[in-house]
Length: 194
Image 1 (cartoon, rainbow, N blue to C red):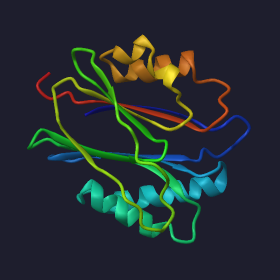
Image 2: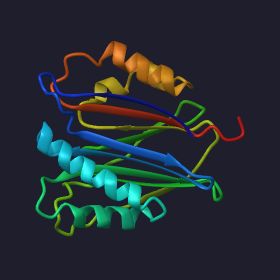
Image 3: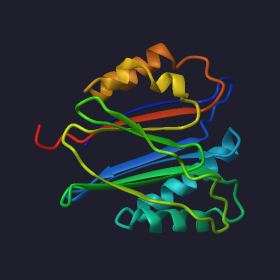
Image 4: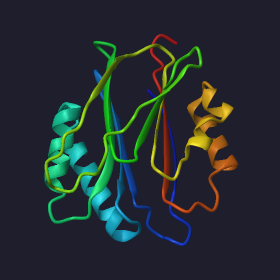
């Protein structure tokens, strides 16, 4: 997987309340993005706690990861969370997003598909959520983003580019300044067989 990340804190804040983590192993790839409720230091503390859980559980299923993350948030500020796992052996992917973490796929034929996140947030209490499964297509691009990225931004043509670095650089240049919210945009490309 080729990965490029753009992140910036809400205007006037030192801490960005968004945290992300990604790792590729021989057989799998995982990427997660969490946005702590509110902004600033306490939002960062919660979102980072979730990333620490994911780093400790990279071989677990998306379903199991979300359950463990939720348990870790007891007594902390809640988070919204998106988790993507790719299995290189089966050429399959799974993802789930809770709250306003968005995930969009773009095929090599420039077909965009945006997932509908599960409502709510993780905050230590049990909540239902769905995990979506799909089949990988060579050249497929995943865009994962926090609520600082809006729908109008996502309709821009530069998201149809094939280079993940160019996608995040163009986003930063076109939209990334003076944001009213913490913003994270992660562009990932399945580059197998290229």
